[in-house]
Length: 454
Ligand code: UDP
Image 1 (cartoon, helix red, strand yellow):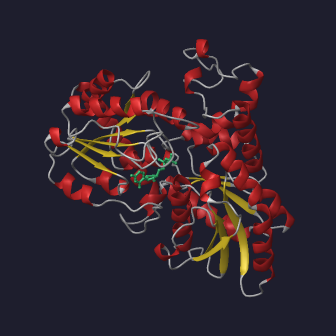
Image 2 (image 1 turned 90 degrees about the vertical axis):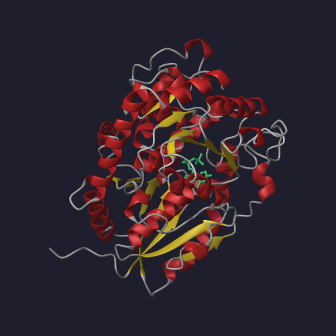
């Protein structure tokens, strides 16, 4: 059978300008480029990706006039709201020029799901819009259930009900429901409802996930949505390791040489992603918990991770030196490479979706400290459903950290978790092979894009 190809068709892709969203969107661009499509990345000037990492794409900046200082003065929910508003006019101007061009057919626009305002802009040009959801399907089912949960009295989340089951969404408990730190928690749920609605209004949703991992959530979404659902992940495993990088910060590769000196499966890799922040007290509990665990550790302390500190100032003097080389701290790591390293035995993560998926793909057990949004749902599934990690319950406490690290790194539970994660790693691999679920879903996506009429 002749392969379907996107040759002669241009796709416009637009990321939400944060690391955990830019990376999967550029990966999606690479995947569709490999199917013959020409790729244009329309992006904000704020947190703009580096075009030199993808010379085969066209990059078109729009000028939404959002400054770094303005962005850092508001919380993430207000920032995302502001981005949605500010992009409307410059995006219209950009599309106006592109749609007039007679040289190439623009087949469709693929936007990050969070950029919900792009739906009405695309409608104005009669341009079909597909959506990329960079989070998991399971957490999206929870997002899509917010109106029902609200009706049934779960919000605002009450401290006294945290251990109660969410009967509409087993096995979740109230404490696993999405939440973010903002002055107006209700505004978060309003926002989620809006972005779910604009996903439903799109021509289809692409997921960085695979059928075997989230089959029940994907089945539920197929019931709830009348549009196609395309789980074609894990995106980063469509290509050989390290083929492209889309890091906004420069990864410190010296940690790989340090990992080379460590024993197999011995190192705890610690990173809470690109956005989460912690207090000084939490930072010190983590530091002592790691030190007392006696396991070697590689720790990403991003500038900005510790509220009110530039970088490592809260650490007691000579803390690292006193560990005699057992710990290594970097500002930003080449994470995929780190997780693939034989020395890494566990990943202590905030359970951002990319980190969760990257850990599964390398067969690395997780220690879960979810912070906000979908992360609590991801952590619940990691620990209780897929059983590929354990949750650090309660607040960050050095003794509990030490105990949990031991549980994962040594002992029977740790072994069972390792077996489970290796099994999922294998399933992820198979899903991308010819005839596999993600492979077939991608074929369907390509065929559908070619049949979309703008
Ligand atoms: N990441 C990285 N180096 C680091 C920490 C994180 O390259 O030191 C990457 C990681 O591989 C992942 C992304 O940053 O692809 C973080 O995305 P995730 O969804 O896990 O969390 P977010 O940053 O969106 O909270």
